Structures are given as C-alpha cells and as structure tokens.
Length: 336
Ligand code: DAH
Image (cartoon, rainbow, N blue to C red; front, side, top):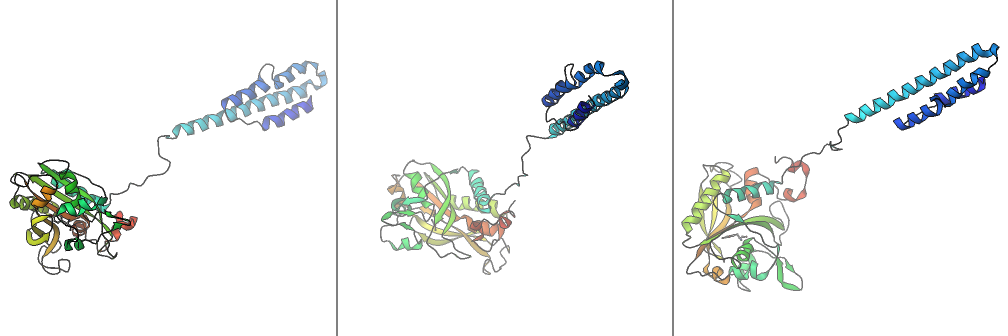
C-alpha cells in the first residue's frame, strides 16, 4: 500500500489540465467515490493494526496533496480564462498606419470641387483612344502640322489607335452622345512621347472643361476661369489671357495667373515676369461642334484644359515632376 501511495504522489504532481473538462476527468479518475485515491481509503480497512497510524497519515497527505493540486490547476485555468476575456478580438493585429491622398488626387479633387459649384459634372473617357477622338474630330486633319504639338505614342500595326495626348478627346466622346446643354469636367491621365526629366514625363494628368449651350460667350469663359483662379489660388489672384492657337478652339488663348509664389513681384519660379501660365482655353471651333453632330448655328461653347501637375507645383512647389510617380512615402506623407 505504501508503494501505491508513493506512486500516486508522483502521478498527482504531474497532473496537468488544459481545460475544465480535462480537470474534471482527473478529479473523477482519482478523487470521486470510485476514484483511485478513494479506493485506497476503502482498502484501509485491511491494513494491519500496527500500520494503521502511519498509513492513515500517508493516505491523508496524499488526498490533501491531490486536492491542493486540483485547486491549483483550477485557479490557473480561471486566470487564463480571465486573461483571454481581456483580449479585444475586434482589434486589428497590427496598428494600421493611415495613408494619405496623392497630391495629384488632392489637387484634381479640388479642381472638380470648384467647378462642380458652378454646375460642372465629371465625364470620363478611355486612355487608349482612336485618332478620330484625339485629333480628327478636334479639327486636326491628317498630316496637319498641329499634330506635332503633341508627341504621340501610337500602337504598332494600328496607326489609328493611340494613347490619348490630351483629355480634349473626352469632349468629343461626350458631344457625340449628348446634345447641349453640356457642362462637363474631364479629368484623366494623358501620354506623350517625351524624354523623362525633372520637368517632363511621358505621362501626366489633365483636367478638361467644356460648356456648350445657346449663347455661350468668351465673357462666360473668362468669368468661369477668374472664379476658378481665385478659388484655387486665393482672392487676390489676377488672371490674364494671351492669344494662342489650338485647332479645336477659335479664338484660342492661354491663361496666366499672377505668380502665387512671389505675389506677382517677380521670382525665379515666374522667371521674374510675375505671371505663370496655367491653362489653354478658347471658344469651341464650329468645326468641332459639327463633327460631333451639334448645330454650330444654334450652339456655341467654350473649353479649357489644364495640367494637374502644373497646378500642384504652383500650390506645393514640387521641384521635380518625377516625384509624383516614384511612390516615395517620405514625399507622399507630406500631403495631409
Ligand atoms: N488639349 C490642350 C493640350 O493638351 C489643352 C487645351 C487647350 C485644352 C485649349 C482645351 C483648350 O480645351 O480649349 O495642350
């Protein structure tokens, strides 16, 4: 019996339970009425009288040790359970660092927001375009030298398919599907075959505007652009329009704003002129309206197109255009 008690002592010391069920199984196996330890108590009757005292003590010790061990394991399990309750299972595993919007998106959205307040809605068109939408419908006849203004990426074997060089293609996408009044803003990426440097890239972004209705005049264009310049660059911003040439507008102009870096006094950014160019614009050429099935005797329109990188540079003075497409987080994080 003594041997059996010692053996059970060892067993008790090695007890382990990972769950309440396992713990209960141990209790039943050893300490329930028919458990191994209780069995020993039953056998106690047969112990010779002269050993009863010693065995009784040993047995009691064993039972106490077993009971203590059981309590100990129970306490450990309870502590583990409480610890688990503290876990917030809805919490994400890793802290997620919030990203920032790309500066070009910020500026693009701001342009859209400003024009949406005077009734412009957003239109879209494909980046892979056909010659007709990018050039021909916009009054660039085949072989016309004006096509050289924009160095174009053509798709090999398909001279008719190209990467759009300007978002003006969206103008004719819309005008062929919809009759006036049309008042749209068309943001998008454009492509030109230019050597990549700090001031040029083979892709960049433009926002095009088009308004076609009855009696649209150059004064309307000027007023819309003045409103835009003031909203974008501040109340005191001045604009000036210089005559220019684009095949799809007549008359055409380029718009400068008073340099918002030096306030028009002259600085390296505005090459000491006090003015910086920000967009091209003009009255939609009647040929363009007619090519899209809009009666140019009834309707007139104005259009404008600006580079998002250019506007962003003016707002944030980014010196190297390549930064916009390198995805350097140190650069991007600065735009909050
Ligand atoms: N599409 C011209 C360009 O990429 C910009 C432009 C000029 C757009 C005059 C216009 C406009 O709508 O009227 O250089």
